[in-house]
Image (cartoon, rainbow, N blue to C red; front, side, top):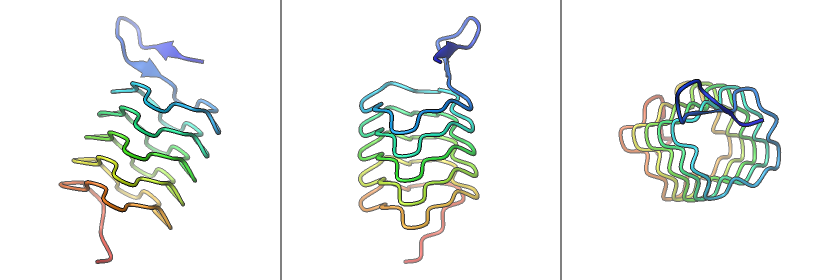
Length: 118
């Protein structure tokens, strides 16, 4: 299931079925997770620096204290995801579904496509 991009250390998990998997503390920096199904996955404390999670299903995923610095979450479904204390600095949240997501104390500094109701 884990694939490395040719001559690179970048992990390719695009379209991977990763429902309810425990990836807590995993280093997935710059990983390709486009369209991955991470429903109810545990990504607490995971390193997702500049990872591409476009169109990924992250419904009810646990991303507590995850590092999503510069991550691409375009069109991702984060319905009821736990992003408490997550680092979303410079993340691209364009067209992401954040319905009922927990963003308490998340760093959304310079995040693109995110509009707070506050």
